[in-house]
Length: 333
Length: 204
Image (cartoon, rainbow over the protein chains, first blue to last red):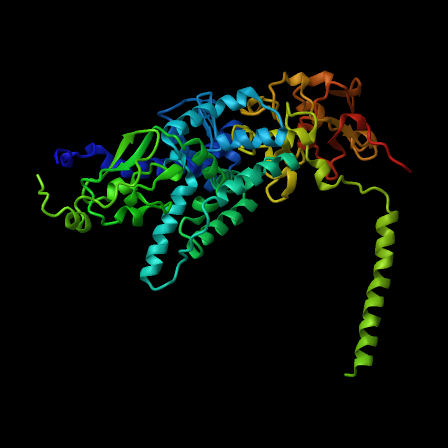
């Protein structure tokens, strides 16, 4: 069995750390950018003396931080603006594919320049699948922390929810959201889409002096995840997740199992936030390539492959007891 | 308490309540228009916004970029109203006026805001209540609205040389800076739709 020496590329085991770095960076940006905006307001008002002492301290701090970067904060700090729903980087605009879909449904026409801003995310989703859900979404950052909280609560003896609903529910939510957007003429999907909610609610809270109604909805989803189903909103209800799952069905880069290295320990199934079945090659279109299963695998049995479809079920792992019993006497190289 | 007595008391209470509400309802029905416009009438569209409010709320995805680049932070959002307007932006000139810098039009990813030269922006037009404005009722000189106007003579000017009575011209784009600086507590200058004219009509 010469192929039993196949090892995944060693850096893939550390991708999960990179993922947490990306997630926390995105979330930190969503908090920092509104403060940058407030600072720019103060700068363009030219009224430092009229600020309250606390505002002056904030002004001084921001000035110290941004002085090495720019000497015209009112203009230059406009370089990075926005959130994951739609943002601009040095004039280059990027938008969420769901924003494009929802806006097309609401206005019942296609606006080319806006669709172009969603093009790169769409192409990346076609290649990498539902990577947005695992790598960028600011709600994922909070939802995964929420999952960790659920584990701590279980250790304290609190019962948390582990129900399983039908995964196809989110496609219904997506279709319903788009149809209702078309019917009411407003982008309603934005009101039930957690990353969009988080982006704008943090902005409302910092720059406009208070949370809006979306914050209540988001706390509701956190409670849903805690009390009904682990990561339940992403798994069963999120319209964005449904869209990316559809786009990423034939993604090129997918996590696959190396059956020769697998010992059937099922840690991958336990760690999978989306409740998939990596142990039996059940990734499907919903895998978000988060690489948590690669990081957790003790025998290097998970790796990235370039394939358009999943491998069919490869059966029990070759290091597992069941496989060894079945193939006893064949000899291992 | 007997059932009969309870019913009688309940009926008395209800009829008293209804009777007391009649004067209130009559006052509501017969009263003239309130001096201050209702809340939603003070919400003005953004510069360069689509003309039709329904088109605008269909095109806007509620990303908040326009507000995030706004130097005076004058752009507010329908945060809790729900329905079709949820998360769409507006400007309330009584809180803060627009400085017509055009950044929001540049940054908007959708067709909700299109880049428009500042003279051709249409957010409404200023309307002056000549029964309240200080110079118009001969309560001193002011000229704050004329002084702040970013468009100058073609938008608002004094009625006659050295006479501080402001008159709004058709070149006004409704940015609302005049409303922001107006010192009169009842804000006799306000931004209205262009069709409503530049002078408040009073029915006396």
